[in-house]
Length: 186
Length: 224
Image (cartoon, rainbow over all chains, first blue to last red; front, side, top):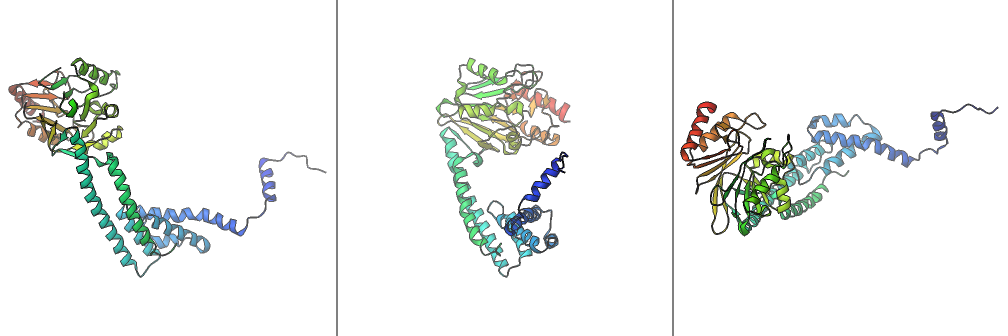
């Protein structure tokens, strides 16, 4: 005899799910990636923010084994690599040190030195250009008849400086990109 | 109100709290004006039209408000600086402030074109006007006062009032620092002390003796 009972929403959902085909190996792997990648990124983020020390990294990463462990470690390394950029020297060096803890490299000292050198060169270039653009801004104020030792331009409000700053940053980001290729692959 | 040759004083006449404003007419190139402390756009409690009244007073003096090319803020409290944002947008005027007061001003949505630090500001191209900027913290960390040595005028903002001083209980305030700032300013040769508020007095103290008496009163009764 046919079951005339009204089915609950849960029962209907379960019946439909049972009819769905099983996930393929690729889909399962993708699902795992989606689940574990954020965990690796989160460990990297906590490390960059100073909530985790270098010595804590292996312990945190070793909580994940086998396939999951691989995903977490890759995401961790990728996040750190992406954090090496011209906007922050301290963050970049910290990221570099974190990478070396998890994936030690014989060339590490040399790479670190190169990164520091790029930052120093970047700093010098910025300083030079700030002076140049301050002069240009002062000339703009002088056009309205404003000058004197008390006047210091706010370059944040200078469109010309913002364009130049982006140009310099992008030039040095390219240098970092080249350097990042010498780091362990992710 | 014309106070001196090209210096105009606008004493706040409303009931709510707002600041006195000062204007140096035709001080910049192309006969543009410098305005010090435009005050509130609208006062916070009684909703009095601070900026409209100021602009009307400036127009009544025969001056064009569209010609304001530079706004100097003595500090970044809203009763002194709120209207600067609109003047900057409408006139393309530059806004100047001490860097130490910039964070508060930014929180109010303001943008600073140039910072003023200790030193001199030279305005105009031929008949130049020289103003000395003093960093006078205590009421706020980046408070400045403006001294016009040629006419012995000191624009005090909220450092000194008639028989009173600025508050030190607001964020970044310091009684000790304010005292040092006042002692330093008291050494200047001043004929006109132009205060930031009309507290119990219009806030315009004329004459060297009256100015010195005011400093003495403050020293004896407030700074101790």
